[in-house]
Image (cartoon, rainbow, N blue to C red):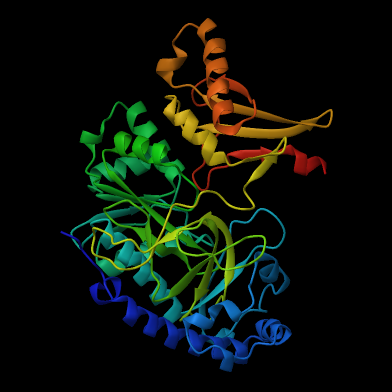
Length: 435
């Protein structure tokens, strides 16, 4: 039986949802035009006024916002409320340039935590559950979002943050945690550590996990589900729009429902900016229609995915997005071929390797090089070392079949690739360092 946090909204008719979205969009555009000079200038430049936006059908008339705009307007240029009304900031874990800082009023925090409560409820969470938050706390949105959502649902909340994996497992066992929230790479590491401690999923009470903040494949999902004995649910969000909970997976595990009473999604052609029909793959764009302090209009996420309104077995009518297929800015062009890290991960797991790997791209003698280091498990490592070269050749051939280009594969000893307790670093592109 499906559980809902807001059944009236999560199962709302299409007509009622469009009416609600239109009302909120019209009010939001007026709010932004009047209070955010930066965006007003973009609208003026495009010749659009709030009067031109009468419903969701007019959304395409508005100008886009990009990460470059957020950096240019840093820190207060996109703020739509006085600082005295703001109660919180969060920031992206960006590694280049100025970090993105997002502001929240109390209304914004409540809205966001409600979205996370929907995700927890969709994963089977109730006030009977013990929810372990092993996302990082602090400026990163992961910890705070799921923590707040957990409180709303009434779960006993363990604010563990990330790290100290053996202590995570001790608390998990002592307090009977039933739901785990963290990055998928950290969930995989917890599963690995559990095994190394001589324990099995029978020694813990976990039933579900809510994992997000980085790309992960279906193959990695199956690995985590097996190692922890759980059902693994995907969650999606971004700091610029609020944080995790913008979209969440239900028990069908066939895409993530977008909380479209708060966030209107579009799919555009990343080159032309044209809105694409439902079902086509393109760049995901979000408009936050009832956020107060930091209301992004037509924000380009750079995530590549598609949307579907196919009827869902869980009963929710909220539109679904597929798992992002990569980011338009994550895509590497190696020897003229488009390569996404997720393609390589899929091959590794299909071939029986762990999701602990590092992709290194460089340029030597004007030619791109692709080196992939992959960790062996203890069982694989105990095989005769002369077999390693055969394994490397075989894996390189499988990756070449997927990508169309040949990599150099290095199989390395167990535990030699640095583990991440936050977002995993999977790719080092040294070409950028030389340029």
